[in-house]
View 1 (cartoon, rainbow, N blue to C red):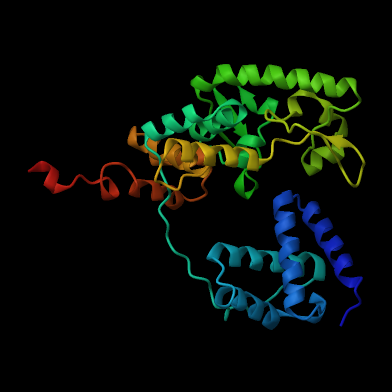
View 2: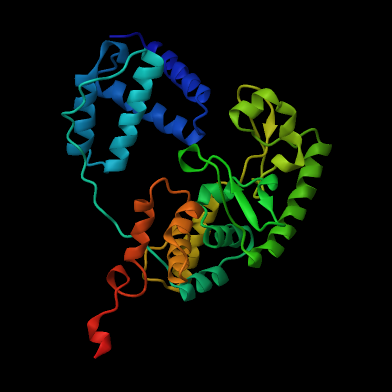
Length: 324
């Protein structure tokens, strides 16, 4: 058995490797959490003393006893593969006997245009504007909150989504109906940024490589978040005070309240607006490949799920009963 200080050293090494590979903070927290669970599952033994059979037992336990979803089990596997490859120093092999968690196919919750309109009317302020970006541009919630000033192109009517899911950049549309509210929001953010600068602050956290190469960019106007947090937070390592983006829970709570207020029977969430964006574009006759690019899907098969929820019956086919 390793000493009590071995696990913290391991996690420090893991976090360093994750940041070196420029993974997101969310991925860092998820991976370190899975490594902790793996170590505890194996009686606090150091992963260097363990191997593929122990990983297989852990992942099988998650599926059978833990009843986790397929995506959760896959994330745990990715965390352990990363740990062994980049921290322990060798590749895991012989993982073919893992009991895989069931992977059910769920149709996305899609809102009608009337339901979208009703929810937007029930929302206000920043939460409404963020929701407009999710529905008007097909953004995920975190993508909308991480938009920076320089990512908005009012002239071209575009938003550049930086480091979206899978670490990929993409360009999507900027709805004309939201540009006026966005300009007002930017004026508010500019005044807040000027006050921060006047008090020695004004820094926004930067992606890893840019933070290293051009740390002064953190105080530039273009790098500020369009939806900044109300408070600043100090970085533990550097002691610099940063103003991050608004936390996603604020918008999630607002959308949940709106769903209850409107009285929807659907289990609508923030992500339902992105689903509705895709479905409504397909209803309007846009090509599925175009929708795929706007959503940032690697495979068009992922986008095809929206053809099953078009408001024209199953698979977009009109029922023969409607022709009688």
